[in-house]
Length: 346
Image (cartoon, rainbow, N blue to C red; front, side, top):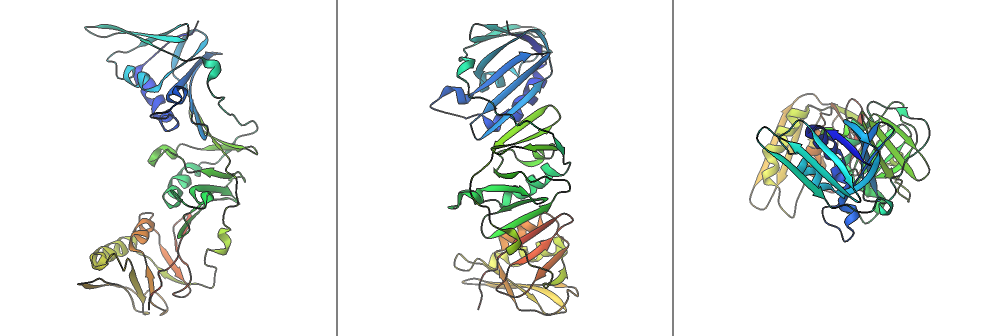
């Protein structure tokens, strides 16, 4: 019989990893549930929505082996209990939770589902590759992937040729990741922020890619379709280069961004050989802000969407590269290239 004890804080930590794979509301209750499995000295919690799946090793003491499928948010409630330990016991398909606090004792019977009906949690076999910068590169790339792109492959992130690449058709992120094997195209992860930095190992099969970190494994199905060839987009060595002070560029864009209009969502970057000047004009205002520096050779004025530039500047690029006003421009960071298509200007 499934029986184990755990600290509510450990349960809360595990559920935070699973949450992106659990449906908030679904016509099929199983997708709102977590698979609890105790066997071989380990308690695992798993969840899947058929696109992503996650499995977490729960820090627990096992008294009996077994499986249960119970609603995710019932476990979230129990993880809030003011106690050091919670005991879970299988009751047929259901799961009984019992705990004691300083002044109270409580129990909750969670109505479960049939574990045999729960979708299979995919797992990739083969050797893990340790790629310590993988999760960080995916985190940086994610904002530049498409959200609801008509070409559905633009909603994904490509892991191939030693690079993590994402593009929405207007801008592109390419992060160089040492030791990254060719894996394929994954959907944009639902995890955000620092949660992705702990993805340090990867292995791939023809249909799935599995990531892992300390105490968890996350699997994504491989997306079908042909991802754009980023080598045809990234400016080559013939582009001119100027130093980029990310803080100064951000301040300059902020000084003139209020002059843009709905009809003219662009800021002109003027590289005259002696300074970098940012200009914007709207229906009732015009603005100009100059950064005093020696950026490099003079070149055509180039127009860019200011919001896209600000997104790039958050990654602290140190150099800017451009060929002409009609070609893609590039910002470079310590480990990534950030490419942006210009806005056509007169």
